[in-house]
Length: 281
Length: 312
Image (cartoon, rainbow over all chains, first blue to last red; front, top):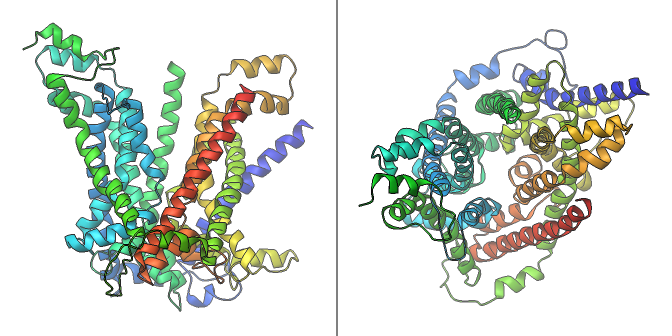
């Protein structure tokens, strides 16, 4: 009985690993296949079923398509890093405020205000994207990186406020109090003391909001058409067009996934660390 | 000018109900204003703007004089068969999709909480799908794995003697495919939240139950599961609210087809706005989605509060 349970347990784990890992393996090998090896009967093992080639990677990194690819990556990077930096900065200020001061907005106190921020995440982006389109048309922000930065920052701020509030609430206020005794202003103790201590929170906030913008599709689709198009748009347009180049798409997708995998590794560290912290309490 | 000791005392959070005063009040405002301003400008204003649109007849392509049409766009929603179908699809993806993701995510969290070698590597692997762009996930799973021509899934099915499946071209199978793709991407989120909840459960009650001879099933049924109920409710709610927004995956995997079989409200709204240019009606449809999401969330919270009360 006990042994069957254990076997079932491990079997479930192996199945789960296969379900997650096999599609990732599949896309890696597809990026090394020829079009001929892709169509027809599926080929599973390189050098056994098919001869791997570098055509797709040469196309992504070296061909004339490179300029499109580079531009999309540059746009994505600027929009993501810009919006993540703004959201994290603004979020850190609000998070600090919400943990160090007492607010009253009518009947609302700090917790209600924090909830108001996070509740903005409920809103389906499609409900406001049309309003953005009309606004951006008036402001000449359509098809610009600045427009994307502004739109993405707006969506990322609630999340950044939430993370930073959590980060500052774990930092004891004593250090700032003694700095105040020595005559430091609120601005000084925020920048010199609280922010450096909240380093991990800042990193987490930046990474999450970065990935959010990096993966975003709907706003980019609606608000950009040529100059400022991002990687998800590049991918989607290639996927839905006829005569799909599966190998090239696989290579592009893999490059697109690099920041995601990096964040996965960091997040796991974070999870382990918070566990040991809990043990100390 | 306050003395140093006064200022020190003022840093300690006060228990009174008074808001901040003087310099502190000014700093308090400075710290929160950028975030508040950004939300008012970038979320609340567009939302009010969209509400205004629903009472007008704004069209992106046709140059017609803009006039007030009252509730015309709202009443039109009720006679729109496409709206009914897309509402049904959205609810299907939310209810069935999130239910499957919850069960699988809970199971995975239990499996990963046992402590074994290679656990950390596995956690990274299981967290990866939720970091990948939905567009990419739609491509990897929906277009590659479940490809009807050369996908490995149909190949594996036929190799064990099962018939190959029309994953994309048959309406109900296409709906299932969308749910599978969404599940591949978002089960890790549920797993992550439940795993965090599992690690906060104290060992004592489980140890005590084990000493008293409780079976693993009894421990799960009467201790672990009830203690994870609050986390479960939060996890399901977060996931459901995201599921109402599903759009990228559908656009890449099926494009909403065959017919409208896999088209959620979001895709319908987007097409109304971008293809027909009917911004006012699209705004009304988007508001219908928002109202549906809020109503379902409130109903869910109401039902689970009673469940929670029965357990604790």
